[in-house]
Length: 464
Ligand SMILES: [Zn+2]
Image (cartoon, rainbow, N blue to C red):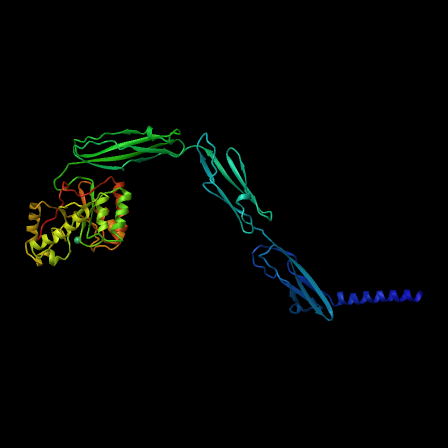
């Protein structure tokens, strides 16, 4: 019995000595840099590093690393590091926790500092909450309302919290908005009475204040000049708005026609693809126009022009200068061709004409010298009226872009005259410029008219 005890004591002693030799005489250093770590969801996991040394010798490159971290999935992952040195296994495990560390983001519609109309309640303008992990959290936002602020709080599933505040001030610093019916510019002919066209005033807090608009200033229709009418409104918070309307009284002049008018005139049509769209726009904008037609294009577009209240006028059957201006007879024969067509479609005999190339053209000289001098007289004697233009859109060659057509027209417009605008309804860029031209005209107080037999003849100088 005694012997057994001695052996056990000796055995334990031996183990201790061996252990001492391994751990003190041949020390082992095995370390994982940073130990257990937490990484952000969807970030890149990078090995923080490891090292093993035994008895002063580096065995790091013998370490086998196993296990993977999927940062796209929240959870805890084990990375195992093991190495066998002199028959002894060394093992360490690193715990890597993937967690959502990012806070949700709250975005407020409207301002963070909001003015609220006095004696009213703030109407929520809306908010959104988004989280990198949970996605849309808008429905989980808690809204704490108090008199002067609203606090929005949201937590994502990982417990990250975001708080945003909207501050409220009960005051009205916004003046009413006045808009003048029929624009800020009105043109009248001397003697024509100015009739108040009215205005609207809308306030953000007080609503419709149109009835409280104060109009000052006056117009003397018997004296040419520019008159200013001032429109004013004040809201309950004493914010004042003011806008001025200019009323221009022009003397009617034989050479200028009715001031402030626009005659949209379209030559060379009709043409499917352009004329029909132009008709749509004119209809929507409730604006009349004049079409100087040819023998081209479908009948139904001429019918539409007529039925929708525009003037269907005559340009030419052929638009071939060598035929049209070959002789006076040839001219009238060509004109009769298109006149007959219009009569057949509309039931009306048109006597409003525009010469191909205009009355000032020189191309006709080649075919018949002096023909324009003769035709400008004989057409009138036969009961026609011919119309040239005093404003070219440039769409016959000067420009091939809608912006060019638009700019040519608005730069050429003059308040003190009738603006007879030459355009071609066969051109896509003219079609595309029309809406903005009309808008500009309306915003600047022009009146749109169509040519009738009473319309003042805008003519150019005859050169042949
Ligand atoms: Zn033409």
